[in-house]
Amino acid sequence: MKVLICIGHVPDTTSKIKFIENDTKFNTTDIQYIIGPHEELVLTRLLDLRDAGNNMNITAITVGLAETENTLRKVLAMGADDAIRVNAEPTNAFFVAQQIAGVVKNGNYDLVITGKESIDYNSGQVAGMLAELLNFPSINTASKLEIQGEKLIFERETDLGKEVIEGVKPMIVSAGKGFAIEPRIPNMRGIMMSRKKSLAVLEPTQNGANTKIEKFYLPQPKGKCKMVATDNVPELVRLLHEDAKII
Amino acid sequence: MAVLVYTENWNGNFKKLSYELVSYAHSIAKSIGSQVVCLTVGNVSNENLQLLAQYGASKVLVCKNADLEKFTTQSYSSLIAKAAETEKAKVLIFASNASGEALAPRVSVKLSASMVSNAVGVPTSVEPFVVRKKAYSGKAFADVVLDAPVKVLTLTQNAYKVEENPQNLNIEDFQYQVDSADLKMLPSEIIKSDGKLSVSDAEILISGGRGLKGPENWGMVEEMAQILGAGTCCSRPVADLGWRPHYEHVGQTGKVVAPNLYIAIGISGAIQHLAGVNGSKVLVAINKDPEAPFFDSADYGIVGDAFEVIPQLNEAFRKFKAQQ
Ligand SMILES: Cc1cc2nc3c(=O)[nH]c(=O)nc-3n(C[C@H](O)[C@H](O)[C@H](O)COP(=O)(O)OP(=O)(O)OC[C@H]3O[C@@H](n4cnc5c(N)ncnc54)[C@H](O)[C@@H]3O)c2cc1C
Ligand SMILES: Nc1ncnc2c1ncn2[C@@H]1O[C@H](COP(=O)(O)O)[C@@H](O)[C@H]1O
Image 1 (cartoon, chains in turn red, yellow):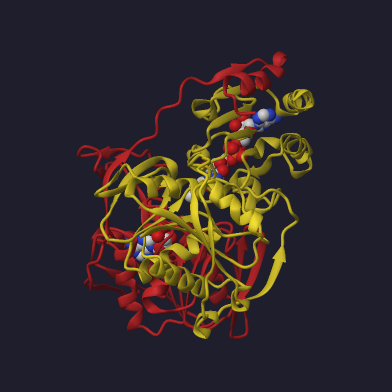
Image 2: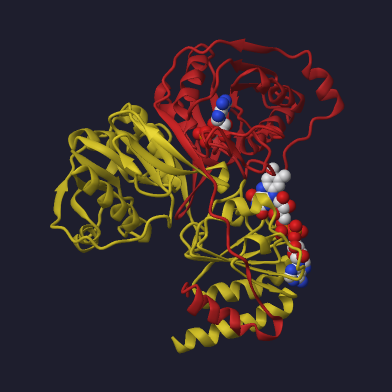
């Protein structure tokens, strides 16, 4: 089975978010970049399934400029078989989906999988857009994957409970938490091997970003926290009722 | 020209989130000189449909079709795109929930639309069309310009206030033929949850962290939730340790929530945790460590041992509720 996993290159989760150029650009100074945490868990699950003996070739793809190669190398060190970088700035989800769709059309992938959302754009759009561009069936925010013979069995949480869905190849899935708990950490051997693995660089095929970020804002800073003493706990209830008017 | 809202129903019922969507749509419709049309699938009583009119819908399309009894992203997105074309929709609105997030991106591609997810307010301008959304996992917001003639938005839950805008409602049967190619991945099994208030629907959330020491101590958390009609959730390590189910994990890598009131018990307030909860209207932190970072983001706090504070607090909430 051929799997393509879409990897975002995102600011570390502890990053302090700041903007420059009149709040039109993200300030990348001192920012560490990581593999998107959702797709990192998805990749961990795929690697576990492959290493358990399932026949699977795992290719990772990123749409990004040269600096994203460190992230892809880490993905290879975790155990992905090979990687592709589409050499373009990922300006919005539709643009990213278009680039990946171009690669999928030439690749015969059975499963294309993304994280449930990027932790910078938080759009949760790439998988759905990709599915529509390719006219593949899709599952959004799957929470579990099992393999039974040739079958891929997914679970997806809904507002009323959960659904069990058998995959039909080729398909697109977005997922995250639930696929794995802790991400796989690359070991020395993985790191050594990653240097020999193929990382192909492709040029972008289309340019269709149809949204543009005009300006960023930081949330209003909170006022000071009002403290309630432990010998007067009911005061909190009064404050929530009379001061915050929330209960 | 219309503002089309996908108003999902749950066994024939709408919920507060549905009325948020319709109220939001009405406000946009007003600013672009248009009307709100809702689309819903399956059997919904006329009485329930009329509720949509209460919040600003002028028309509701009801699609009854045996092929749509089970959800697939393809069949529902094809239906919605068809309805959008029939109604000449300029703006389409979905919830930022399991189905809205699945459908909106597919629909946006079908309609060559511009799309923004997790909108937090009405457009700041309609010409050009600019919408504010959450970014950097709630650590920031972004104003996004949507260039294409058709715009698709998903609205963050609890971000827009329900407003009454009574209209005369036109109820229409929407005839739709499902393409069998759209029914490829039907769910083979649907497992109903235990009927507990879901983390995303709750207006009040009681959240527990590693400070609660073990799953056996969640009784007092559940009790508080029960008194307040709240939902329960937890920090990531608590879910990872298996003390609580995974769907309760909130934060940057779990569910992002924005209830009216979020009470954090024994949670330190790591940046990844706060990223998922800082959209809440009021934050309360209860922690025995006065230096816990949560106090920097909280509106109200108690420095104390949860095992002593929570029973007293539950008692006080109970008294308050009895007086109401
Ligand atoms: C990539 C990444 C993603 C992450 N995503 C998330 C996420 O989505 N959500 C999330 O929650 N975390 C996330 N984390 C983890 C996060 O960094 C913190 O480790 C986590 O939030 C801590 O959980 P906690 O506050 O429950 O536990 P701790 O940090 O152990 O804090 C326990 C708190 O309880 C207090 N306490 C102890 N005993 C008592 C008592 N008797 N009474 C009152 N208070 C008491 C302590 O003072 C302490 O402040 C992520 C981390 C990484 C690296
Ligand atoms: N630039 C990118 N390159 C490859 N995959 C991406 C990129 N951006 C986002 N993705 C994938 O798409 C998912 C959803 O992203 P988004 O729609 O931006 O929230 C992420 O979790 C990634 O798996």
